[in-house]
Length: 327
Image 1 (tube, rainbow, N blue to C red):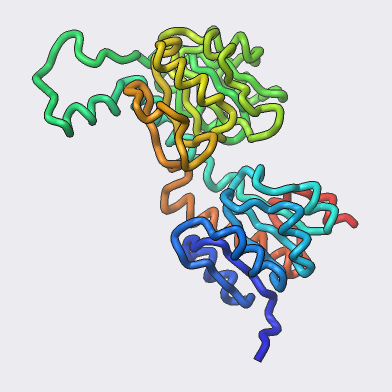
Image 2: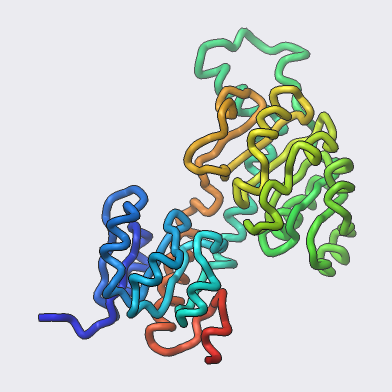
């Protein structure tokens, strides 16, 4: 017997905190394999679907939307939504939602984890210890960078960028930030200064990226900017891989234009730029920014709540294309 409940497809298993909410009110199908759902299979499954809960790995474009005549909502299990053609969804009356806020603290923590690891060369130290290469303490062995009193540069002073600044207080760091918008709170509380990208690049000791992916931010950190950075600078990216020209970054790290980098995201994820994994002065993490139990439960709950609100004819907590709701 055909179910009268709305059909919902979840493209990969997410925490049960979210799935339980959907399962209670919908005809739920989950792609159970622990990998990205094959594109052709997604296209085959989408025609009867009314609610789609997807990941950044799924491309929600004109082709898919054309095959989904019943689709009402795309709930993205992420803050960013560069995997979705927002204009195409809006034309078709499909509401797009995301999950900001709930992963802010976890991602800010991750940025600091990478910053500390890269500054103090922990990746190199770990490799030495695991390969039996440690021969004892030495006065010139694995010298890294001090943090206290150094200048922190923030690219993107939104929720996560601001949370990273909050965590800098104990290190008494002067703050520079680059953003289209002024952040009055950071300026008042931390004496942060809004500067140009070039000024930030040449002045900051540590640069942490927290910008969304867009045509304007694609390869924003290119060869020119990398060459403007201090030779002692450390570059951190927990935002989107394509904001950095990774080919230029490999050259910058290899030729010591900058001291080090810490990366949690990659331009052609999960592939790495050629040569990146051969460099000692970069800490590489497999997209772990929001990977805490609390953050992922929060993301799952919010993604499910957003989806269910739209299917119930209500306004979701976080909608990317609000024009759809006022038609």
